[in-house]
Each structure stands twice: as structure tokens, then as C-alpha cells.
Image (cartoon, rainbow, N blue to C red; front, side, top):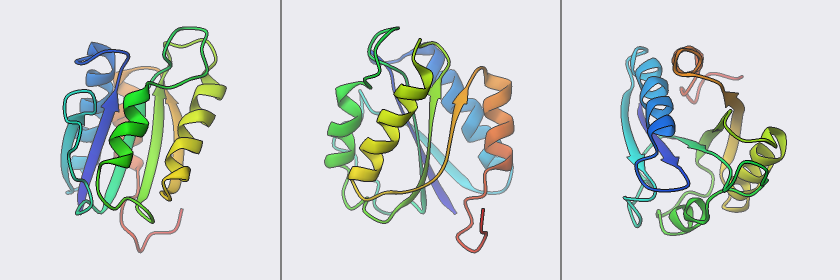
Length: 143
């Protein structure tokens, strides 16, 4: 299956999110799936309609904020047909209001009509790899 891992930090090329996205994609790829990773800050306007599964990773706009970067919503609005797309979302642990940030991201994705299957907080790269390894992107599998 074709999987798209999208990440969006407070600015382009966020080192922590890039590492988390890379480790998560390695875990998914270890199950035989084709995975591509994109920085939403740099790839605005990219069409992701042909991917079978979408993963979004982000963080808050500031440490104590519950808001996610604006570019997450902008990207999803211009990414082609994402309504009904199976997906999962994750945030990095480097924000103060983790639960609220994750809830904001989930609402943003669901407002675009995406079918959210899994959400979690990623504390480090090893955990991200383990999450990717156990993530079931096959549509026949019921979580």
C-alpha cells in the first residue's frame, strides 16, 4: 500500500519532527508498504489523493498553546480529495498541552472528512518506529 507521512513544525525543516516522521515511516515500510515523507511547510499544494493511508505529525505553535501550525489546515485543504481517506495523527512531546494539541489536530483532520483510525503522542524516534511497525494500514484489517 502507498502511505504518505506528512509533518509540519513551527518552521520548515523542523529537526525533531523530521526525525519522528522518518522513524515512523521506517516502521511502516518494514511491513512492506511504500512510504513517502513530506514537510507540509515546503510541499504546499502537493496532491495526496492517490495515497491509500495518510499520517500527519505536528506540534503546537508555541509551548503552552493548544493550536497547531496554520500550514496543516492549508495543506489539507489544497491536497486534493482527502475526504474519506484513512489516516492517523501524532504530535511530538515537546509541547505543554499535549492532549489539547492532539485534540485540535484530530478536529482539523476530521473537518476535512478524513477517517481517523489512530492518534498518539510520540516521545522519541524509537517509540515512533515501534508505532509505525504496529500500524495497520491495510483496509481489510479492523483495529
